[in-house]
Image (cartoon, rainbow, N blue to C red; front, side):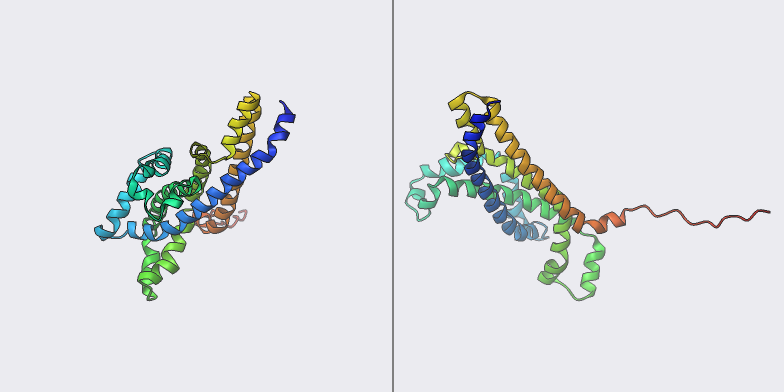
Length: 243
């Protein structure tokens, strides 16, 4: 191990880590905000409301994120109407295109996660809420969505980890992230273990922190589910007296 090379590359890895975390936070925050109303529409009994959302999630989840990133960054630029539009100053920027592709991708997956959690809501919770006079928006805001978000924590945590790992592809659209820094270190010094090993350590540390954080959230918000599945204690029997 050439520790001198690793030490000299640490500032570059730190800047790449900043790009990675910034993209992760912005895209996940956008996806979370958009997926809540889309999930409600996805479970609607009205086909004109649930159908378009199903089509969006089906197409996005059926194509690789790298292809979607290329389509946004390289594909839109070939249309003259796009280059002449007011959106072109944003669409020609790699940062905006990366955020847009990642936000749309995580929105599709998160929508299906939340929709599945909404469908899994026990009927008793809905009936009890309606007995108290809750319906429509108040029912979703006070009962259905909070309950669904708690149940969706394990799957949503996996989605965040997948999005974190997917940020390694943004170097293909000129952004200098952790993976791009590792490639540059390897190209300059021909030390693959030092270059990509450092990138692996960074991604592993971030994954470990994310998984640990969601485990704490699950322990707090899903403790009632653990209590429900806890086996009942054996019945107490009084000792028999000797004859």
